[in-house]
Image (cartoon, rainbow, N blue to C red; front, side):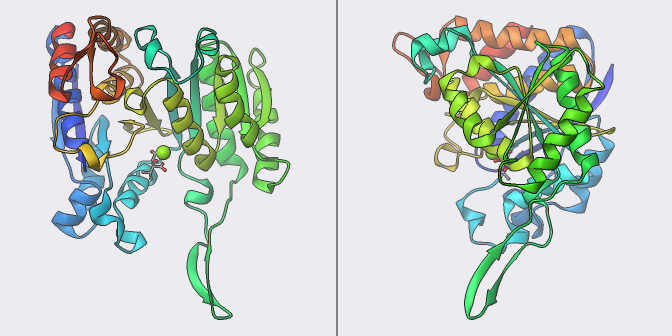
Length: 358
Ligand code: IPM
Ligand code: MG
């Protein structure tokens, strides 16, 4: 099959990890006889430096014309002082919005090969950890208006608006229930309906939408409790359905307990058009340019691109197996290093994985 992939390497370690992700996809194309055409566009700080804007028009156009978008990471201290509209992160939020990517799937699982890196007590880890966070991605307090910072009665105030309409909740709820149908058929809807109106609506719509999926069980949990349960006993979760802000926070937590933020992939999908695939971690400016980053979250995002973006399950599995095999062979980047394993660079890890795809 012939497919176009738009690469958005971004900032910090972004270009290093995307290079390894691309290597894996090239190996897949070769093995399975596909033709992947790679385009590249600017996003985030890299785009600010080149054009003055974190999300140039040309980038939106290239992404829309592609079959999938493959993103590294954006942001860094260099651009932190800029006015809000020019910050690198605005580029990321802008491309999600421009492509209508309302559904963000973040699977967190414990690779048996990395059990030693898991932060949980061993009896808790032994119960297993294999969940997916279905995070709403284009609404909530991230985009709600009014927002701003101004002077009121001589004092500076900052304000944002947490807002969801029922259609926005329904469409992400459907994605969560559909995802659960392919798994253990359990959805836990996470909100704060003891305090927030948006959350009360969220719970109502979750209950309504479940009627369309009678085989799936639905449970509700307040976000503070969910944060606690994630470390107390993550084995209780299958699919977590939640809003943009709560999903942002809980997905870092879910990632960290698996052992490393560097391992976790994500897929952002819309109603139609190209999906966007990116690791959940940030641009890690402290190790940028040092060839030290863990490329596995990016490579596994490439597997999600193949499975969910291109409907290529066998190809996706080949990539996932190659990652597991590289880990089983003892190769580790610094973030997941343990005694007795072989410390490798970002690019060496990428080569190990690509070699196992061929
Ligand atoms: C993420 C990131 C982004 C978010 C930032 C960089 C804007 O934390 O993808 O989780 O908050 O969505
Ligand atoms: Mg985040």
